[in-house]
Structure formats: C-alpha cells, structure tokens
Length: 368
Image (cartoon, rainbow, N blue to C red):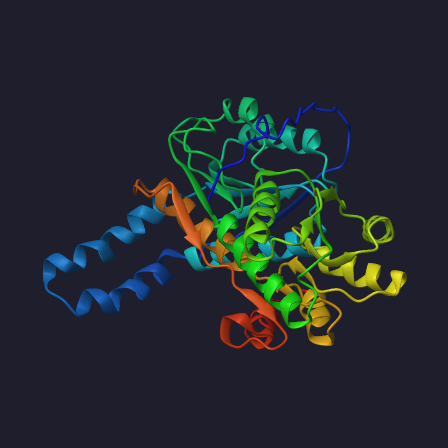
C-alpha cells in the first residue's frame, strides 16, 4: 500500500480556533484484585512452580496502574461509526480490567479536539491515550507536550513510524490499499455482470480529507484502471457528514455525469448518501460504502446498496485498550497491527456476508 501524505496531495491545513462544547464518557471497569488472581490461578495450577510466577505478578502489574486512566479522544462523537468504536474501546477496557474515559467533541472541528489532549494530561492520571487522529500533522504540537514514554495508540489511520512524537506509538487498522483494490474488483465484476464495463464513469466520495480515505480513493482509482480500463473514475468529491447535504452532493454528481455507472464512498455515511441519491435521481447503480452499522447492513440487505467494506472498527478499537495496557506495563509491541476488512454483499457468505456482522452489532448494547 502506498502511503499518501497531506503534502503529496497538495493540501494545506489551517487550524481554526472555534469554541465548542466537549463530551466525556467515563467508565471505571477495574475489578478488585481478587478477581484478577482468580482468572490467572487455573493456568498457574496446571504447571510447575516456576510457571506460576506470571500469576503472582498480575496483582503487582494491576497495582502499577492504580489511580491511572486510559483515554480515547475523538471528534464527531455522535456519528454511528464513532459510537461503535467508542463502545469497542470501552469493552476492551472492561476485558483488560483498566479504567478508561472517552473524551471528544460533538463536531468534526479538529481545533476543538486538539485542546483536549492538554486537558486530559493536566488531570495527572493519564496512563495512555488513543486518538482518532485522521493522520493529521496538526496533532504533533499537542503530542509533543505529553510524556514521551506514554503509550499512544492510533487506530484506523496509518501514519509512518516516527510521524507522531512519542517513544511508544502503535497503529492498528486494516490495510486501506488492499480493501480499496478488493472494492474495485467487486465493483468491476458487478458492472461486467450487468454489461456496463465498456463505457461510463464511476464516482468517488469521501467524508473528509484524511490519510485513510485519501488512500482508499487513490488505490480504488488505480485498481479500476487495471480491471475496468474503459471506465473513467471521477476525481474524489467530499460528501461530508451531514446526510441531507451529502445526498444532495451525490445527486449533483449523478446529474453532472449522466454516464455514471457506479460509485464508491470511503466513509461510513456513504451507503446512506448513495442510496438516497439513487432514489432522488431515479437511477440505479452499484454503490459500495464503508462500515457495518445497522443502517448500512440494512441498505445492503434491501438492495439499495451493492456492498460495504467491513472495516474492523470493533476489533481495532477493542484491541487498542489491550495494546495500551500492555505497553503501559512495559511490554514492547510492533508498531503496526493489520486487521482484515472484507467486502460484504447481499449474496456473500461468512465474513463476506451480512449475518456475520448482524451478529456482531446485535451483541453491542444500545447500538443502532
């Protein structure tokens, strides 16, 4: 996968100082030390005396995190996809028996979110932090203010090692280039089955400009050029995160390009965007979006959307809690952890089918 940075794309980032409210969600999930001992005792009893040492050390390790807290920082907290990853992180904290807190803003203004780094650090109890950073360099000055030996997790967005200033930075995500290629292959195969691969255009829309979506757009475009070379992939357009406005933008793309035969959205609201646009424009096209929220799965099930990319939102956020704890206790971890992101369609089976993801979200309390 090629890494695309902001400068290579010719993007100039200007921070804007806006005052907005912040939201915090706290969870104290650490059980008493006796519970920790109970979970490790069976493994100790099954082996010789030397092997029992890890079980004896567990309470001491837990004690080293006493009074400490791990933070998850994210903008646009009410977005369904963001709600999913927040719940995943808190479930990971529960499983790891650590205290955690979610902090963030109700909008996608990065300037507001940046201030929360210092606010959390000022509490004096931070053991580690996970930031939904978008891969933006605007975080760098704030991260420089944190203790450099503090664990930092960057879920979902891939940045080069050393991009963010800390000794213990860990990236956990899918391979955006890989699933972009797979989305292009699935799109092209569907268009071939419909006899629509000989001429026409394909739209690409993004929620915002960030390293993950930038990469998906570029790699999808490149792969479509290989597998469906007679089709033209349009330059990516930003749909944003307001559903009615996003639909209106997609309708405008369809009207401006009457030869449109397909569409890819690189964001979790994309299925709603392109399902709504098709209805308003009165034209049916294969469209692929991101993420296994319930509304997106339902749109695939109804046939309003051809498919989704099952970005590993639950797994990457839940595993983030584990990585932060292990690093805080002194364990050395690899910089990059890569998780799968299958293409899900109505006719797919297993991890490529709808039932697998309905089962996941049905187990998440209060998730829509």
